[in-house]
Image (tube, rainbow, N blue to C red; front, side, top):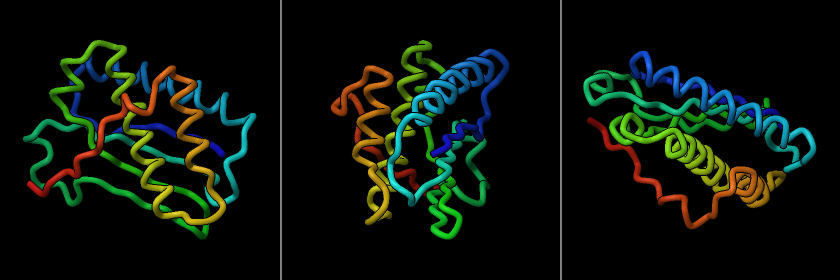
Length: 147
């Protein structure tokens, strides 16, 4: 499985740079880790692009979040929101945790969608272990409401 992490963000200069650096570190660590493991044949590419927009930037967007699994090409396209103010006000370690939490929420949604050929429980446990997090530290997800 290949892991890809991007972002749709309205962060300014320093905050954008912090997002870029932290997300690159996460992507590198996860990809190095995943090359040695197998989680089934249902997903070849796990693509995530967390969305971090100020309230003003959300107004008028055609979608607020996206949760797509393409069975035919075994790929995903997840764009789940991270609270803008929470991210901007977090230290670097908390920014990392927010991004990992976003990844875990996508994996949990995939587990719900894919009934065979995807060991989402193992993938979730491995990601949490890789970043020394416990399942209890992942907050329940609140669906983004239409603005």
